[in-house]
Image (tube, rainbow, N blue to C red; front, side, top):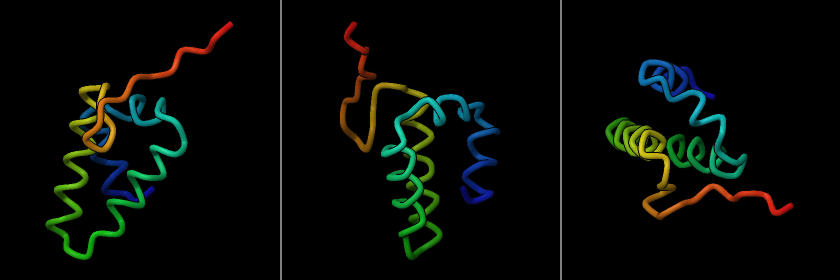
Amino acid sequence: MPAPVREALAQRELTAAYESRPDYQRNDYLGWIAAAKLEVTRAKRLAQMLDELARGDVYMNMIWRRRVPVR
C-alpha cells in the first residue's frame, strides 16, 4: 500500500474499515488510485475511497452491503 494511502486511512481512522473490506475491493481501490496519471486525479480518487469507507455502504459509487454468512 502506498504511504499516502496508508497515512490518509490512519488520519481519518479508517484503517479498520479498509481492512474489513473484501480483498477484491481493497485491490480495486489501490489499483484505481495508482492508475491515475495526474496527482489531482489520484487525490480525487483517494478522497472518494475515504468517503465510501466512512459511509460503509458504498463501493465505487454503488450500494454495497456486507454479506452475512448463511449457517
